Image 1: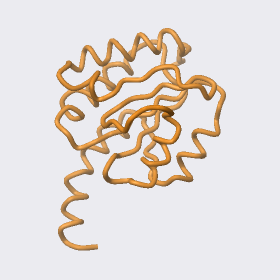
Image 2: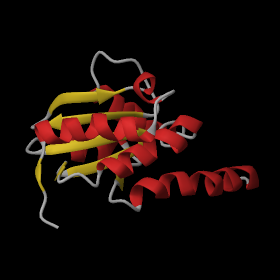
Image 3: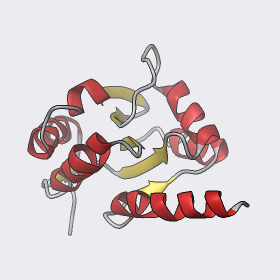
Image 4: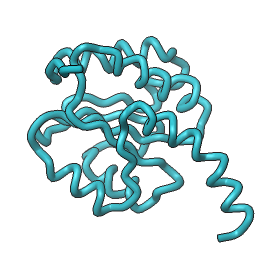
Length: 147
């Protein structure tokens, strides 16, 4: 690996950590995506992370706020667009009839896509507005988690 790549990975790591530190499992291969998506029962929040400013200033903070809700998804997973290309491409194959969008968020219930926030729903918004959209989805499709 080149020094430039090492430096880039070092710069990206905090952006990855923002989600993994709040409970997300990072999927870095197509096989890991398939493994998660094969789990049809329950709910899965899938976040497509990215380096853009709206991911850092709105999307990731919005997700963190939404996770304070009493109803939460059973699984929290993420791929990093532009970094984990194979995993991101495979994940996008499950977001049928949708153009690629990052950052973006997808809620699945029992294997069915039930909620989407595209970049267009995030960019120009606020973390609080993103959290409100996510918590509305959580309240509708998820169950209360024991702490």
